[in-house]
Length: 113
Length: 114
Image (cartoon, each protein chain N blue to C red):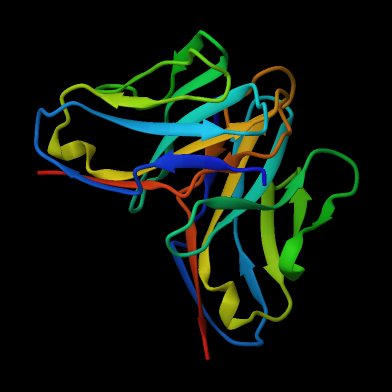
């Protein structure tokens, strides 16, 4: 089954404790992105990757890091989480090309206290 | 630069009534347009998309949308909604050609009332 898998689904952590949210896709997609979803703000892109070892900042990259060492994986790293990073996070992948459909993971609800 | 405006944050509608969810976009280049749906506790999934050709696009679950270039709109419609249509709906836009960032609107929550 074609899917994007994120882990964990729920996470509560404390300020400053490094964490990683994993994302893996099995569709051999070139493009992958991370978004955060906040009430009234919709989805905002954090980082994206056009292929292995090619990443770039989205609209709200501050406080986040990513890596793309393999085509299928695109982890999101919060090196020193803060309460304003409490949010619902989505990973998405899509084939190369402008009009292609994005496939989303189930989401990770992160709470930083 | 491109942007998407979904003016209605919430739309309540009675079951079996018609519904229209509004989407307006802004872009300096040719665009591709999408509607995604998010059911509770799930990720987004594609409802329909407009790339070119006929301006009336049909999607899954009986939804359709019409691309109107002069009004820069891409409104989503369904003639008769069901309880199962209760979800949040996102309009999205991307430029055509090469890698283009997808910009999402702020979403419209459709609440279907029994």
